[in-house]
Image 1 (cartoon, rainbow, N blue to C red):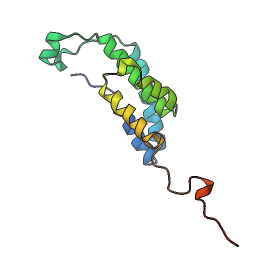
Image 2: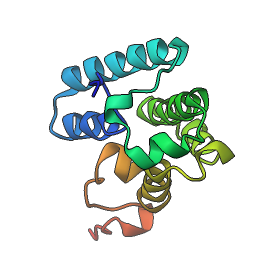
Image 3: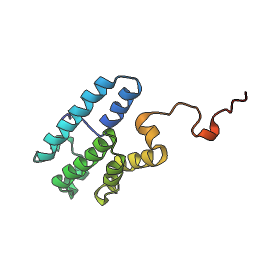
Image 4: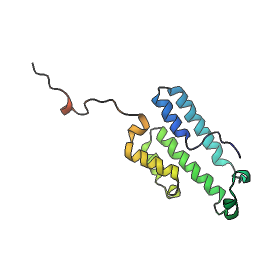
Length: 138
């Protein structure tokens, strides 16, 4: 079974690093993920028979190029979100190629439900509008 430098979960590691104040490490990991994505996007996929279950091997309907391209699309969506381009990330996540992707479905759900809080952490509690500010009486 072949190992991978990065995976679909790397995105969550970057968010965790950011939330714990390790911004340099998060930036390094994001740059490494982008470089991995760029290398992976041009690789010719090969089937790893050792890591393939017998039923998959017997049925083998999915084109390895499609699998690669779908994964690259998902990594592009994650990288857009990490770059704070939420509109582009959401648009990529809505592409039909990712309709059956569990990773994409989870991320779509998280962005839809939590938005900026998911990507940047909770906002500090406090007044959100002028109407919420205390009125001082002299």
